[in-house]
Image 1 (cartoon, rainbow, N blue to C red):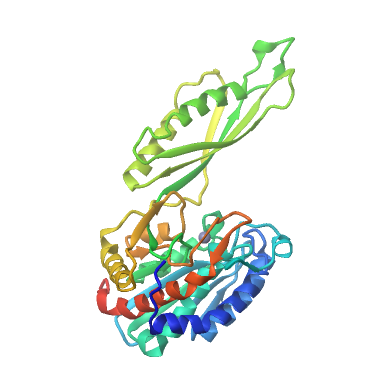
Image 2: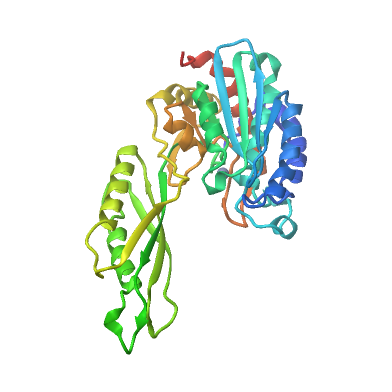
Length: 392
Ligand SMILES: [Zn+2]
């Protein structure tokens, strides 16, 4: 960390108590993706906070997942900016009571504090500090706070895509690990379920009348797992198996779940093809049926886009002025940045706060680094309309 301090850092410092107060209220509401009531309760507070920052808020009602929030404001400039954050967490009901917002040794703890309730508050605080004149330099500033990122954004993705298509730059508010880091690349993810249907039989009386689904699945798993690293940047993990149930019965059912990740589109498509080829190859156990089902929530890779170069250059220049040397990370974890970047829209991710342990009960944010990260965001918001050209 640097001891850099200017008017923007001071402005952010002044708003830090308010930011932490609001964050405490947000973190103390359980908002696991499958907890619609919880996400909706949180979204009432988020909507109020967006309105405080001058956004006109649209609530999109969802039947299964929490509602989506879209905040919009208009200016007199050219650049159309999209901000993307999610309100859901990976934690079950009861987590917030068990581990409420707590400050200990300069760190703030609580469910979803790092990933990524604090990211939404960081950018809103930065917008407030940047002020109306700076915001007016944009044609529009839009923010989507979605409700289902942690399961691959199945219900919010169409809205994110639609907003990204009419934007010139996207900032994703996922957390990051240090003051000088941002995320420029994320692997794509495809998730699958593999079902094998065989025929049961008495294992002692008529063993050969059966068709052993577990045996077929085992052979498939070994060949699928062999694809791991067989194509550059590709990883594959068989993460769960179920099947059979009785020692004396030839099993007629077996299922595996697995996922594949790849850093670029070519490798991603090649690996998908290789997976299909394994599944469609000759059966070890004649007569069994195999079905492969891909989870519809697919994330394409967020590749370091040429189109994002101006965005990254601006971030680098600002960090340098603050005594920081930008490091752009590439990570195996996907986010909604994969969706916006996959459409070719300049995207920078990891603009949220600094901490550790996402998806873990020990997740935290580092409080003393908040003013400098918010100051970076203030400068970025102020400079982007000058350094980026609108797409059309
Ligand atoms: Zn996240």
